[in-house]
Amino acid sequence: MKDYLVYLGFGIAFAVLAACATVEDVNRASELIRTDNELTRLLTEVRPSDQAGSSVYLMGLAANASETAKKHGGSADAIAFYRIAATAYWRSGDPKVTEKLFSVTNSGQEACKALGDKAPDRDCLFLKFVIPFAGLESASKERQYDTELADINFFDRVDTGKEIKILEDSGQYLRKIKNPVESILKFGSDPVLSTHTEMREYYCDNADIVYKHYDNIAASLLSKTKSYYDRQSGLGGSPTISTATAEGLRKLDNIIPEFCNN
Image (cartoon, rainbow, N blue to C red):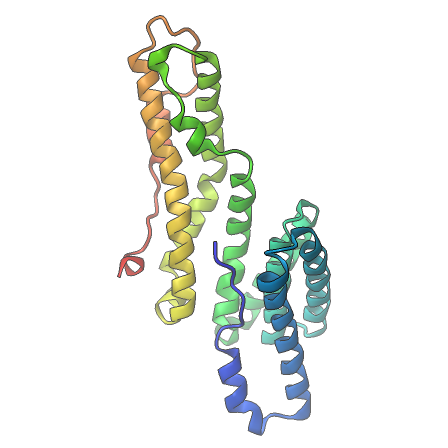
């Protein structure tokens, strides 16, 4: 997945407004830019070659951004710092900061609601994305279910018990990630996406990855489940997942929005 690395549009807005801004405004904006730039540097320059080292720095950056957000109260700047903190906690990849990730994300979303129409819509939209994306990404690291399902062959009658277990585990995995996937796809109806090209591209790229990840596993699970019941005579074992259950898991209530295909 792509990382949301920049405060979209902020550089342009700051350049236009700088002439009439107070010294305090400039200092505050500069602090936000510096923090955002440091996040970008860690994600693009440090993390690719040093995952462990970048994780420590990202957690430190997240903690500082969170504290700075609190100092700014419920302002638009506070929301931007919460977005930075949430991104840094997420991309640190450390499961120990999950609670902190939820905390800063919730604080940012509450500030978005309080500001209403005055809230920075792109930051607020991204704060909606963070938890579903982070949860799905974490779960997807458990096993390569698509590969394991592809290797199942009930016709050779070898390792049938192990293959049945793969069916059941894959079904449990899909149950676990279905709600985050539905949430991500449902975001496609957010009106902000129709007005902001960068966020729309970010969303569409990731929604496509998410949908294909889910559907590939769900389609394979359905195919292999049908295969088992077609060949169940003499196979032994009794999977707890039925063809009807597999069909239900594959069905999603939301789809990738049409504008992502244009």
